[in-house]
Amino acid sequence: MGELFGTDGIRGIANKDLTPELAFKVGRAGAYILSKGNKGKIIVGKDTRKSGDMLEAALTAGICSMGIDVISLGVVPTPAVAYLTRKYEGLAGVVISASHNPVEYNGIKFFNGNGYKLSDNIEGEIENLILNNKEIPVRPIKKDIGQIIYKHSGYYDYIEYLKTTIKGNFKNIKIAVDCGNGALYKIAPELLREIKCEIVVINDKPDGGNINLKCGSTNPSMIQSLVLETNADIGLSFDGDGDRLIAVDEKGNIIDGDHILAICGSYLYNLGKLKNNAVVGTVMTNMGLDKYLESKGINIVKTAVGDRYVIEEMLTNGYVLGGEQSGHIIFLDYNTTGDGLLTGLQLIQVMKETGKRMSQLNKLMTNFPQVLVNAKVKNELKNSYLENEEIRNEIEKIEKIFHGEGRVVIRPSGTEPLVRVMIEGKDKGKIETIAKKLAVFIEERIGKQQKLR
Image (cartoon, one colour):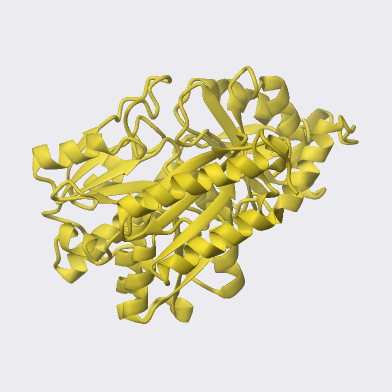
């Protein structure tokens, strides 16, 4: 990660950290690096934040100043931009969104012409131009200046594509939907009605300021209540930019990303469609998924936290299903990024084809308890904790205690002076005690008391 780009693009408080001046520079630099001197178009979409208009105006001005046209999609989810960038043969795609973050934040993230998030190297090239105020030697005039082409009906193409990923319709299936007042507020209900679902929808009236406000995938209690109140067969809860899903079974139980991987992974395996016999997760994936897949004869591959790392692993080794506990699920046969609505459709497809209730499918795997404790450390030392021999030895000692029925995951925070200690095992009380002790142990060695030895 650089100074501007984090794990999912550029983020900050709109008009304070992420200013229109910066967005203009990002538009110019991004167009310069991604066009590679070619003429063409860049596809732009946004979520429902009021600041999206301001940032889109500045960003597209920067792109057009490079002689590149902009296809403006208006409000669409992140995965729609990834898909439509490929369909419309764009040089790149850009999403203006801060995903699940509060409304005061916004962000800018890029896709390359193939619909994949940019590599660290390409982001570094864009960042280098901006932070070092390097002059970009391109200033077209007259008819060579780029123009904005408004295609706010482009979401129809995305809807039609999603319909091709399922068989038939979902008549007589009742679905509760929480749109999170985000980018799927119109598309999700429209698609679900087209495939004959009976739907009950909440948080589908964005006003520019209510995106993710006590609703959506980070606040699943809302969809849980709605499912129980309406006797729905399944609940679907989306985040602001529609790239993740948290589902709920008919009994109101959460179906997180790990359970979705269990359900869809075993379904694809039974159909002979799980390429290379593996599912890709992250180091935070619950051990319950490991144990379940192992019992089915399916392998699990782990990556660092972040859907971009999951996708990189999938591309490198030819896997088709991967994702995170948070609900970012990638079906690489269908799209190049996490797609909440696509994931919901695949879950309903499994329910329909197997004839099982969602609560039955949700019980395929059993979660191991997980405990997360933060160790407060010196910011400059948070990435070097494993250089401390005492800490390494302590982690090894703990893992030996579990005998393969638990584990320790330590990782630095990307934004705060913290080392996150996650311990997983069968006995919640036991792992809580161990996690707290390990956090204190780490603080004593790389916290305020003393430096690394």
